[in-house]
Length: 106
Image 1 (cartoon, one colour):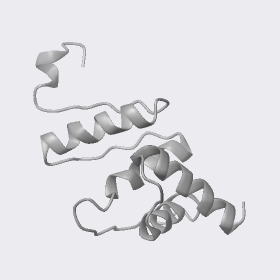
Image 2 (image 1 turned 90 degrees about the horizontal axis):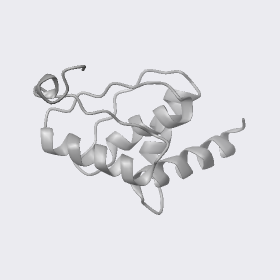
Image 3 (image 1 turned 30 degrees about the vertical axis):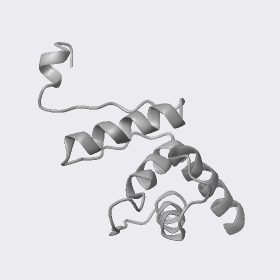
């Protein structure tokens, strides 16, 4: 797949996940490096930039499981709800300290 097609595919995926009209250049570049170049990356960006969208997009494009550690419970739950609402094909799972109390089979 050529570079332009990669970027368009990534942009569509990020926009679908976040419900935004356009993806940020840094998001597209990060996903491109992870999915197509198989690089390791560190993405440092401000709150609200859409760092989580990068992880979700990688999962969506590769159909692989990703583990994300979210230190803020409320933020993680909000992100899970956003994904569930915007991308019905993705099935995010939330695990926290109380998971074993809510679901004995977990």
